[in-house]
View 1 (spheres, rainbow, N blue to C red):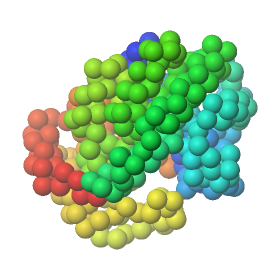
View 2: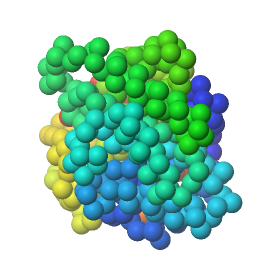
View 3: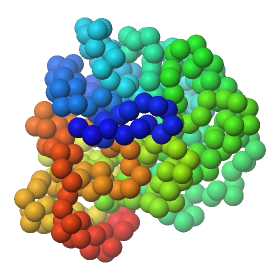
Length: 350
């Protein structure tokens, strides 16, 4: 396993991060225990979760994934130091979490304490803001004029950010969290947090996790360049486009128990004719090079300049083994050239 620096945090994280959002719906405690044990044995030292998990998010499953991880930590207290643990505070819009309200300083304080209780640990290594208070161009909202940046009150949002930073800084000084990061945010979001942290001598953002895959690479080049030069780790989530790049949903297939067979909070916005055609072409490349579609797609994300650690998820040990094998050796030049030809034909298929 190879490792990278998590931005300017001083932490060293594995090039692959174990995502956990299916734990509590598609996976139970036993499955989670097995995935944690296997991942640690392979050198993975980075685990990501969130207070809103499991997914799809519901009032009943809110906090379930953190509880499952906490049960493993409680059963293995001497092993807590073997991995970097990341979790996230939910943004606005979920009525069963803080009444669906914005992230505030008060929400940061209460949510960190709640996550610590569920996780049964004294500290969180990386505490992330799951999505910003303003609407950001994520979850299928990245085409021009889908949202209007000019309608945002930048001053009001900057004031909110300062309040959030002050709460995060207090929690770092109290030893409850070590670093903080962003998720589903933009270059302006990153840079405004950096500006405020420098102006007020507060904690500095360490990372951002955004969707990034062969089907959705809108962060390249501008946001990724921003991260590289600002010392902010870039953590792709959904590198398999919610499982689509495995090929299992081609031509409308919906395998029983698969993620797309569940109701989706943000609808199946990745399921388009263009995506379907692109995936078919990528599967052909995988077959040509003796790889599984997942190995090909994950290998491509891993070789993108600026990527720090790729967040993967699996609903079985077989899937986890397949995913982790993608990080054992780089894709060869011919495979990359084959992928590039397809990517140029389908740069934004959803």
